[in-house]
Image (cartoon, rainbow, N blue to C red; front, top):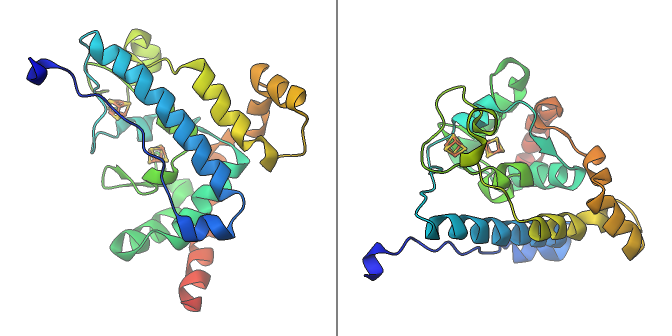
Amino acid sequence: MSDLLPVHLVANRVSFPLNEAVHSWLVPLLDSYYEADKGICEAINRQLSRGRELACAKGCSSCCKTHKDIPVYPVELVGMTWYVTEKVTGEKRSRLKEQLANHNNIDGCPFLLAGECSIHPLRPLACRHFNVFDKQCAEGEDAYHTRRQDVLTPIKKYKEKALLITLPFYGDYKKSEQKKLVETGAINKLARPLKDCHWESLPEKMTTFDDRQ
Ligand code: SF4
Ligand code: SF4
C-alpha cells in the first residue's frame, strides 16, 4: 500500500550560515524562498494526492529557454549576483562567465548550463513557482498558455508571505503599507525581466572576487 502512495515533497531552507552572518539581506531572502518552497510543496502534494504527476525534473529545462519575461525583484538580483560571484565553482564557473559575458546573444536564460540551473538554490521566485504536471513541456511550449490546467497554481498565502518577508529590503514600510503593497500587486512594479538585467558586468565581478582569494 505505502508503495502506491505518491512522494510527499518537503521544503528545506537553503542555508549559508557564514554568509548570512555577513549579509543582512541574505537571511530574509532565504527565508522568503523557504516560505515560497513550503507553499509550492503543499500545492504539489495536493495534486499528487489526486493522482497527478509532477512533470518537472532535473535536466528538463525547455521552460528556461522559452520564458522570456521571468520577473526578478531587486533583492533577488542581489542574491543571484552574490551566488554567482561567490558560490559557483570549477568548470561551471568558467562556462558561466563566458555565457554571462555573451548573454545578449544567447537564447534563453543565461544561468542555464547543460540543461541545469547553475544558480538553483538562489533561483528567483518566478522560477520556483512555475511547475507543470503530467507531461513535460515540448521545446518552445509555454504550458501556461497551451495547457493552463497542467500548471501549478501557487497557494496565495505562501506567495504573499514570501514577498512580505523581502519588503524591508525596499524601505521602512508600516505593516499596513506592506500588506497593501503585496495584496494590490504594487510590489510587482519593482521587478524587471531577467533577460533585461546587465549580466554582462558579472564576469568582471567574478574575476575580482577570484583575484582576492
Ligand atoms: S516547466 Fe516544463 S520544461 Fe520546465 S521543468 Fe517543468 S516540465 Fe520541464
Ligand atoms: S534562473 Fe534557473 S530556473 Fe530560472 S530560468 Fe534561469 S536557469 Fe531556469
